[in-house]
Length: 465
Image (cartoon, rainbow, N blue to C red; front, side, top):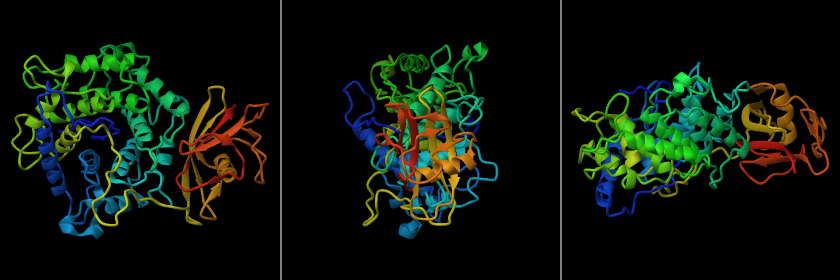
């Protein structure tokens, strides 16, 4: 049913909620509320007796993105009321295992997990003492093609890197990655936009033949969302062109998008999630057809009620788990991940995550190094802490010895102590231009070897004023 090359369905950032709709909209707030209620009930029915959604191979973990968009906390989803097997705890335990995701992981494994862990209320950088999903994604930075994550030929790995790194914010709601990283990825996404205004799964940058090919509905929705969640406004020329491409694919009598492989729920869901993320109402203006139909009309028509599941094709006679995720998330106003709702379970916190390093347990941290001259280095640093916190000096030293990709840090001055860092990679402080550090998107301050770093902190060092 799905034709996703690596990443099978996805989840936001969605800042847009369809709660108060214009009179021109054809799907009413009451219809949307009913769709959400029944859709959540169906997704709850997919939970296994052990509390799991994710497993080996194709699994239902994308349900977390849709549940969060619809206002249901994963920690409240339990099999038969057994809170010890709540969906969040079981998923976190899976992500923390050394054998997950497989012996041959790809970057989209970690992007998928980041988006869904965030929606489930698991801090993706602090899954456990040894599991940092943000650092796992950083490992796939392409040094020879800066801005791409994973092989550039598989362009969707870069799109979902943008969705995961920008959409899965810190627990306080801060974008954890530095602006320089965001801009590098934005540049690559723009360069892959096809002539018709949309995008496809494969790389098109620099290839006139690929750029001239017809775009994919699904990937256009995801790439739009990736740009918008990275800070690009919906008035940007590339977003306007993408919007026009989607409009050109609308089917007047149903409100569906005519996707590459025909009309289906998943393509519609991805397109609507892209519009949602960009703050573009999918029920008015360009997306209200001449017969008064909208993409939400189509999605709601695909839902079985009161069962709540969505069918993949209009001709199908039963629901599909993946179509139900994509359909519900879009109808609920979500993009490709959502902040976790406050739990209804008494005493359950909104967030779960590792609080400190565990001495003697190997850990990973995400690091960027910006020399102020346009050379951004991105890597995952491995180290074994000896206390509940570590220092910037220890991390930079570890990066010299063991970082993926390598070469992120080649030298640090001074080589010991706790004082001010005066040089990294041979670039020395000069007047007011000095090395500064930020953790988890905080303001940059003077970098010292003794700067405290905690478990899961996303670290950015840069040279400048």
